[in-house]
Image 1 (tube, rainbow, N blue to C red):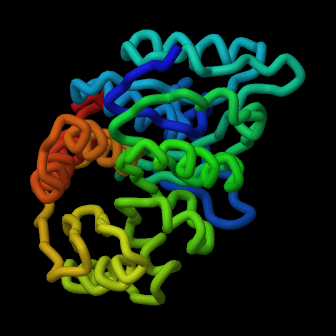
Image 2: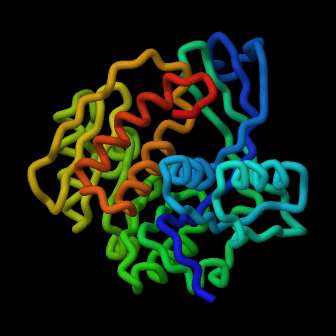
Length: 288
């Protein structure tokens, strides 16, 4: 039996333990926090939920442990109406998790433990018919490459989010249609420091030399799109008062994937994702 979806995400699921404090601690420093709460995350999970909320029929491919964290993560996919029939429960591994620290300005840092996310098997994405595949770097790079190859055989549009950054692989990029990198990842990949949208445009052009369309997101500056090695388009940020930037990049990726799957032109999809991400960071509950 072949399943047909608008968007499929092969990636990570993490249960985040979010802490709130006036500022992030310096090296060797302890800062007294104000609150903490659970938040379902993982770049893969966040992107799948965002795509589903944007109206795409979305499937998630991944793994959780047989534990309370895994139950919470699966319930979150169900609540967003993400198909999770291809999520495996791994009895001998704990679910992925992170501890994330967030300050009063919405800035954050995190430590991630992958756990069951490293157990994805090729059988989980076999016979998957999908318009857009979305991949990132929080699972095994071998699985990411194999999933891209498997879906690309059916002319799937493959989006590669370079987070967290790993050295770019020519073998992987041969199977990618769109690279999405934030300003830190783009600098790591190209050596171009990004302090303006024109810097982001130069980085996007450099990334497009790999033969892919490319987007470099630059936070409150906006983003730059370079399509088919052409002249970059500069897309200014929507001015909002941020509540939290946690997950904004994932939301951007999910909306881009959904709109491309729905037949929207790439430039329009990126522009809409830019607006949606701005709304996302300005919402206390992280819902655009």
